[in-house]
Image: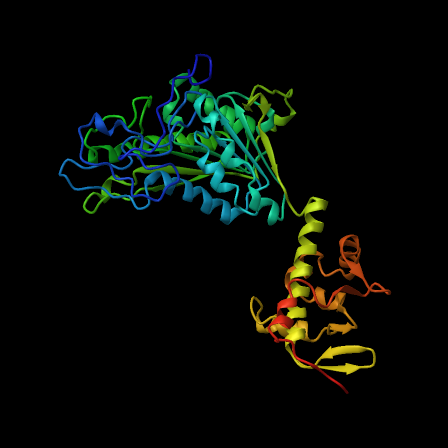
Length: 447
């Protein structure tokens, strides 16, 4: 069944219960005292599919020991597993990440906020997660108001962790969180060849229960009825080292879920192996094999689910963001211009004091802005030199310090002066009218 040859099992209800915190929540996730049967509630990452509708959160992730002393995992172990992956992504800057058995899509949802990530893929064979997983992965209103710097595409596939599909080849990171323990012996034997040999990512993260921790739980049997096995640390490490050697990876062992005081000898609740490809001895490239597409793209309302986020790499969002940053800077300078002392120089009115915003900038940034040409007014028009705008850090970063690029983009949506060296706006508009209404405007000082 793990390879997807049999119908997937129906999944447990993932709605929050008194003993099951909402996925991604911040509760302690400590099960109340109960019989072993009652602890079957999944307190962690529900319904992760390894091709079996597997669960990435184990039913005893947050339970009591027989001595009635509560084991409080803060945060819950399922969250600690996610944050372990997040920290790795922060450290290594992975761009392409696949999560095998993505379940309720919580890990994908967390990873989409990383600036470095450009492509996220989830693979799951179970049915229920697809009913709602896509909604939380779609870009919200804020994603259009403040676009990402880099493109991001998210795609969900229906398929098994032991199926070869060329669309998962060459990723920076593949995660298998609480997945392998759901594989039967046949599929477990296939798993290394598919993930390490065929997909051959730069890094693989595998987490699985540490059976040495189980006696601390009310029932020292498997943590989930769907688990085919649970390994102790020696068993997992022997398997991992064999796999790493065969496919030319190195592996380091860690874990999450600290044991209670006095039980340190059992190790972490969840054991984790981080495999990194040995670049000096690469495996034979499986990408040269005939291209295989066995995954079905997940559909919502008969539409293929794949979503792309707006980013500054896309022209329309880049122009929009640059124009917004320029207008914000102009409005701040105009407000300070009208409030401060000014004097007449020929046909221009120029500020005597600083027009630089006092908030949101360092002293060095303000000093650099002050060294650039100052804004001025002529009649009812207010002018801000492009060199002045370019001194603002956000504007400068967007155009990589190019005055010509700034000029080209702003000319499409804003008015420039005759020689194209400054942006021209109305001196008084609906934003600055109140300064006149409240008599906050400083009179110009004649030279």
